Structures are given as C-alpha cells and as structure tokens.
Image (cartoon, rainbow, N blue to C red; front, side, top):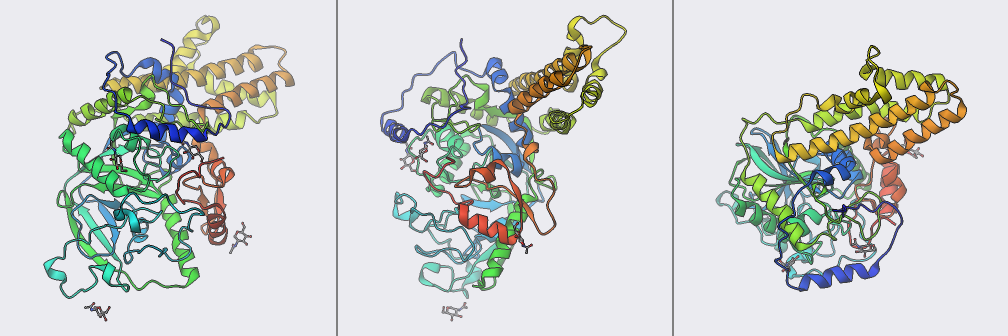
Length: 548
Ligand SMILES: *[C@@H]1O[C@H](CO)[C@@H](O)[C@H](O)[C@H]1NC(C)=O
Ligand SMILES: *[C@@H]1O[C@H](CO)[C@@H](O)[C@H](O)[C@H]1NC(C)=O
Ligand SMILES: *[C@@H]1O[C@H](CO)[C@@H](O)[C@H](O)[C@H]1NC(C)=O
Ligand SMILES: *[C@@H]1O[C@H](CO)[C@@H](O)[C@H](O)[C@H]1NC(C)=O
C-alpha cells in the first residue's frame, strides 16, 4: 500500500474555498463506513518518524509545542496528589466544572478580574483587539467571550455559597465594580488526564484544535470560540469512556487543565480577592512581561514533577496512514482536515481503548522522552557545529569521535554495516516495548537514529576514508549534514543564544502576523516585547490569521 501520509512541506497554497468546502461537508451526515483494515502501522511510524520523535521530545514543554503548534498526539498524563493549581475568576466560590485550572499562577492571574462585559478589554497591554471582530458568536452564551479565552467567562454566575452572603459581587453582571479572585486548589488524589499536545488550548483555525474538534468531538463545524461547549463535549467524552479521567490537559501560553468536576480530587485552599485593577500602563506591561517570563520558565520542563506522562500510552495520528496534509501548505504544520470520518473514528477508538486500559503504577514504562532527549543531547550541538566547520581535519575528528564508539577495528566490517547497526540501535538497546504504542515509537526512534548514523557514515566516507579529501569533500559532507538537520527539525536549534535576566526568549505562541519571529525567536525586554506584541498581534487568536 502506498503511504498516504503526507505532511505538506513546500509551497504556500491558499485555498480560500477549502474552508467553505470543509464546513459544508459538516452538514452532510457522517458516514458510518468503518475500514476494517484500518489501524496503526509501523510503516506510518517510520514514515513520520521525525515528527513522532519531535512530539515525544516536546511533550509537556512549552518551547517545542509553541513552535510546532498543531499537536497530533494524545497521551495519558497524571498530576500527582499535593500539587497546587490555580483558577482566576470573578467569584470567590468554586465552580462546579467543567472549568479551567492553570499550572502557573501568572496564567490564572490573567483571569482573576471582574467579569468582562462585551466592549470591555483587559487593561493595557493585554491582547490588543483583532482587526476584525471574532465571528458572530453562535449563541448569546458567547457574547462576553474574549479572544484570550482562559477561562471563557462563565455564562452562569456560580452558585452563591452560604458563606459569602456579605459579598454583593458574585453577580458581576449587575455590579460594574466587581472584583477578581484567585483560587488556589490542592490536588487531593492523582488527577488522571488526557493530554493533547501542541498548542491545543489555542483558539485558532490553524489546526491547534484539530485533535479536539475533529478527532475527539468528530465535529467539523465546531465554533472556534465555543470554549465552553468544547470543554463540556470533551468532559462528556472522557467521562463516557469510564477510565476514571478527571479531565483534559492542554497548553496555550501556559499549561492548563480542563477539570470536569471540581468536587473530585481538589481541595480549595484559598480564594483571594485581587486588588483593584490599576490603570497604570507600565504596571500592565510589567505584568504581561512577567507572565511571559513565567510561561518561558516552562519551555523545557513543567517543573516540580507536577505532570507525569505515560509514554507508552501515546496515540498519534502519525501512527496511521492518513492524509495529514495542510491545505494552506504551512511547513511542518500537519492537519486532520483531510482525515476521513471513518479514520478519525478508528483513531479515537484507539484513544478510548488506551484510556480504558489505563494501567496502575505497576507497569515498567519506557521513558521515551528521556531516551529521545539523550539522542538530541548527543547530536544536536555537534551536528550544528559540523555543518559549519571550515577545516577537513576538524570534520574528521568530529565524525570519528562520534562513530569510533561503534566501530570494532578488530573485525572486517564490510561497508561498516555492523557498525551502522550498532550506532542506530545504541539508545534502544535496553528497551522492551510494553504496549503497541511502544513498538510504534521504537520504530520511529530507530528510523531517526538510523538516519543520523547513516549520514555520519557518509560524512566519514567522504572526509576520512577518501585519501584525497579536500575542500570539495568538506562541502559535500556539510551538505549531507544540513540535509539531515532539515529532516530532524530539532527545536533546540531555535533557542536563543542566551537572554539577560531582564529579557525573555520570546516565541509568539501563535505565529500571527510575524512569521519570522516564530521561525527565529529572539530575546526581548519589556519594551521590545510590548512593541512586538502590539505590532504583530502576538497571542491574538482568530480565524484567517494564519502564517502567510
Ligand atoms: C456592595 O456594593 C456596593 C456598591 O457597589 C458597595 O458600596 C458595597 O461596599 C458592597 N458591599 C460589600 C459587602 O462588598
Ligand atoms: C459542533 O459544534 C457546534 C458548536 O461549536 C454545535 O453547534 C454543533 O451542533 C456541533 N455539531 C455536532 C455534529 O455535534
Ligand atoms: C529594549 O530592547 C530594545 C531593542 O532591543 C532597546 O533598544 C532598548 O534600549 C531596550 N530597553 C531597555 C530598557 O533595556
Ligand atoms: C487557510 O487560510 C485561510 C486564510 O487565513 C483561512 O481562512 C482558512 O481557514 C485556512 N484553511 C485551513 C483549512 O486552515
């Protein structure tokens, strides 16, 4: 079977008609034809090996998930007992749920203010209004929703609790001078969550919502802005599976939980009223800057062991022979829009089976992220260095340094076949796959390591085995290395060289307007961040504002 999996890599094709077509198809009844032969395949895992390894490397890391914002993978994840989570709102009372909980205090604080009314905007320099208004809200419920959706303002004021009768601000609709509240909760039991990778909490039409709206909800006409409907639908779905899940874990500018039921596994430890909002511009700028700094602290680790991912539970569209093409041709940004309903149902079924089969602590899981990190750590800086060296001798020393480990000079290894095999299998030597998904990930990892090792053996051949190696050989070797780097697309190569303590390596979480800044993030101070933010509508979500 010819692989149908394709990730558009070249060209920018604007198919304005496409959206119309895909939305039109939503009103046609969903076909129930199940493809009995359809399932995950090792061939697909090999074909998408680079994307799979990068997804594993980036999971639960703000950095890579912001760069590659269209997540195609789902994992089981757990927040252990004793972790604090935060909820910003306009009420001192815990909501029933579904509602949003932030992992970072600064994230929740963005929402700890009086209820926004239509026409209000969060104080400067909050997200500037989009040039064009969001599409007409589908229902009056969404009237007061803001582009920065976390959390969308509850359309029902939370029930008044018996102990806050002296507070007349619980219905901010009737009180224009309401207050904001920051709730802090402690997890009392481990929270079991379905984790959706990518910038999955980003309200964009660029594909950030594909695993939610298309895969889990099977809804091709879901409104971008219907966050509450989305949360409810996701909670209904994960609850119906009966795997004991508490909710869904996603990421925007910060990681957040959609907690389905606030009475399960949470203890309210504080609900503090916020001070009056200052209308001082500088205060707002500093606040936003510190918010982004807080988010940036999670670029490479959520910190404190607050989330544990079960790597063997990874279900990914990359494991299937499906059309992951992006109709807008955006490089490296896969979509699920080309995947048929039957295929989506089958992948979703696998997610359900994995959730149902959720195992306890007993399984000795393979730490795939740790393993992929080792590969990246060994090769990332070296490859980048080698791709730029201007001395044959240095290239020889580097490539021999990497490969001699795997070469046994005592044996006659024709064409270094055995050495290549040892090099490719080096990091997976001790791995025993425990799940079907482990086997698929293993196929992907070994495809990537084989690609690295075979390129290095090519380089060695050109600059070391060749007695006449010269400048031309060096150029050839460097070209091989650059081709390899183009395939690997490691996000580590986009990190800032080092920012001052008063700066942040800023990556526009959604690359609206300024594609270059998304491609090559740079250090920003408060002033340049605020300026870039305004100019480029960073973090501003909205339809039809994808990267050009
Ligand atoms: C109730 O609201 C009024 C007017 O907004 C305000 O003056 C008063 O202080 C509030 N009372 C309490 C207990 O918050
Ligand atoms: C899809 O979601 C929208 C709301 O965003 C809702 O109105 C519609 O009924 C949903 N369609 C299906 C088939 O569930
Ligand atoms: C902030 O950065 C901009 C541009 O990088 C620079 O011109 C400006 O002097 C910096 N401001 C401060 C306060 O460091
Ligand atoms: C492609 O981009 C256009 C313009 O930004 C947008 O309207 C459309 O929804 C996009 N299509 C898809 C499938 O993302």
